[in-house]
Length: 59
Image (cartoon, rainbow, N blue to C red; front, side):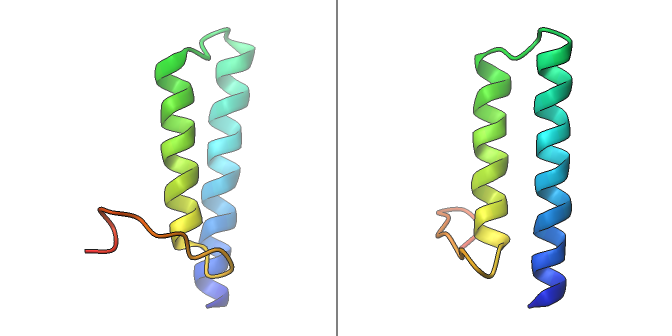
């Protein structure tokens, strides 16, 4: 579980980096915001402390 949790931390760092890059480049459009939400939802699914359900990944 700790390895899985550490993976989520890395994924969340990447998501934040993408967000800040988009803000800095003034490219934080609707598509990027949707991707950021999608990626965060997948990280929540992987995170053993949250364990969020996901229609695709739970199959």
